[in-house]
Length: 125
Image (cartoon, rainbow, N blue to C red; front, side, top):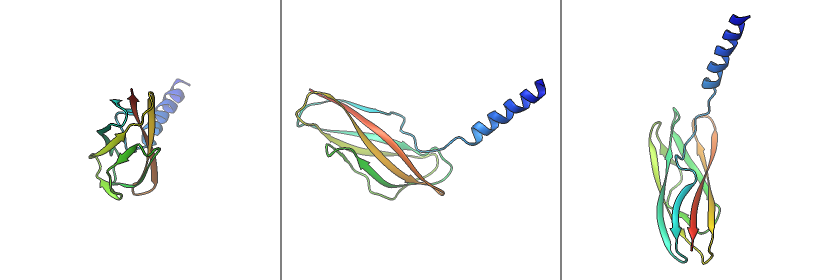
């Protein structure tokens, strides 16, 4: 019985690591850019890491509000093990609050579309 349990445990561990999904990673999520004064424009960056074994194509991105502007052309390729720094701007409104904005990226590797989100957090005073 002990051998059966040992074999099952070993099989489960191998299966778990072989099926692990590889996708782009945002190492800081949310990305906190700190305080942005009302009507101020603040520049920052987010970095996309390709942790997979195939090329990663950025085919689209959507920003949750017009207060964030991303400078990134579509169909940019990130090679396996590489990263891409993506500049963005925040234009704060006149409200006093903590804000979380969403950016949804669509990537394509050799086999499928991958959807990954990153949150950009800032505070207005």
